[in-house]
Length: 99
Figure (spheres, rainbow, N blue to C red):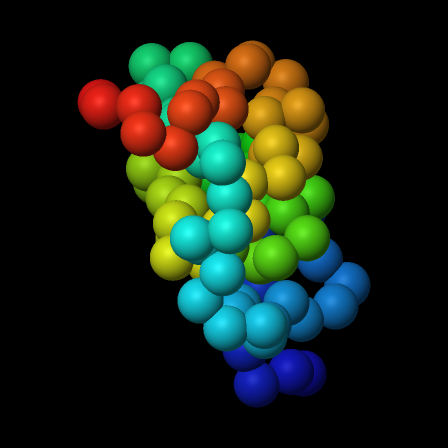
């Protein structure tokens, strides 16, 4: 058995992601992801489910947590998380957008 057993037997990646392999690259982006927690499946159901944003993030900056968090210091703003979100809980906003 592995050192770090999976907490959720259904949601996992087959390879390990390396956060920030290219350094702090968040200042490269022109738009950033914004999560509407009222639409986000794990937040709505208060249980680990979905996490497609985490699975498809090429930079490994999405945390598989409740609520889902995105490390903006390393996020390049590619928008894949927003594209893959089935509930459209993630939208890409202008980098200067005020919450």
